[in-house]
Length: 478
Image (tube, rainbow, N blue to C red; front, side):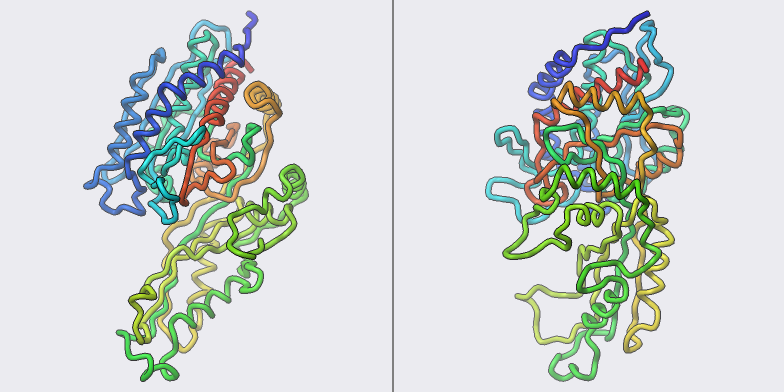
């Protein structure tokens, strides 16, 4: 029996209405909830913000008129909850509907961050034209709403879809430490998906469907240098007692070139083959100097002025960011004291195929060996997470991505690596090696996830949701 493809214009119309009438109001309420991830809120259970976000999303999803939909909040002792939703395959359509599609998102958020412009704030939703500002809207509170809207739209136009499982977690911004236990506990209910759709990534421009082909891994830890049992007068002790800050600087020079930022530990590098470079070159040629545009202060220059090198740096090469410092008072509070210790929180982004545990072990060994002046040096690893590199696209999916992008954005799909980390993808890549993956999202130019003035672009959300509908139909009819 011939299966007629749904009218893309109708899918976009349904998505447009859903975003305006239902998704944007729900996202507005969601932004108000300070649902910080457990790494940033140790008392998350007592505070109840994650649970409030879970309930908001659960209630919205449970109210959708989707045939066969079940919505359940699953809780394992001591772990943040997950929302598990199931929709059975369309019956009697003649389509290939016995496969499972797994759609993924998360609801936990990064902390507030300073620098929000006047009138905006992390927990203050503000709509300004086509943008909705506030923490978590694009990263990625919209995911559950968009996933169910995509399924609902297919049912409303009578188009088939396969079995769909939607999994929304609450610990992604902490590195997804709670997720492996849920994936194991829910293995039978998740099944063996042939397609995974992750809605937690980015788009390099607003005019295309952008698909992420790789994600970097992660290793983080605290480097602590201790030289005294307590602080002493700097005039009396300086010149005799070594500075903990100077020792920390010297230790960092062991692992990062202070002039170029290149990471000096071989275990954090991987070989870049010709295919990786060729794919990056195609993206760099299309985006050009847009890859170098960031809110630089004054005359600050990028680390590389070649768009290709910049793209490779942020997708396939290791980098270090010092994301926090302890033991250093503010300028207003800093007296003439030689401080007893300095500690820095170090975040390493790793190439997609780098072994994060081996990388962390190599860093610890290099940082703590033979400390200058015999200081007490510790490197405590907080977290390691694998990166991910996409398997080759099946022909049907390559065609479906282009068709979905053409129908909803007006141009073919584009592909690029991403500098961030989604630990769930590495986990799923290992667990479901035969699955196809579509990793995409709404974090476009300037959307500033994790930073001030984060926003979700509403027109792109409408188009992405309609594109997901098209992909689900293509999967069912391939």
